[in-house]
Length: 111
Image 1 (cartoon, one colour):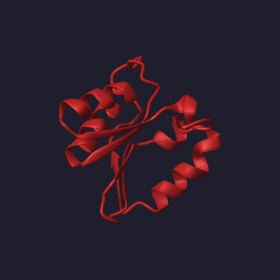
Image 2 (cartoon, rainbow, N blue to C red):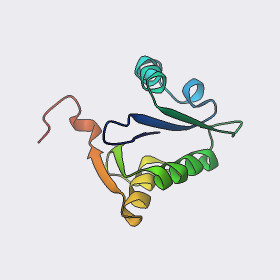
Image 3 (tube, rainbow, N blue to C red):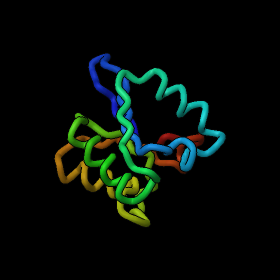
Image 4 (cartoon, one colour):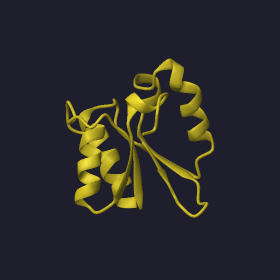
């Protein structure tokens, strides 16, 4: 989970421990590693596994510290607590701006 510090401040990362190894797909690993390496701040939450509770806590911390959220989200409700849909709903309820990237449009038209 990433957030932009804004005004040239850089990217900040909040993630449960083990997130890369258990959740990041192999074809996204290089991008994930680059974002983490170049981040100005990385917070790794002390959960033994990437669980619903870990994702919810990461979302909560991110929202406390964020001025905006960029969400890659298909517009569907989350299958479980802590998913992208939950994050978007929580951000909107907290009046944190949300910029949505629609996954089915990533490689096609932006319209």
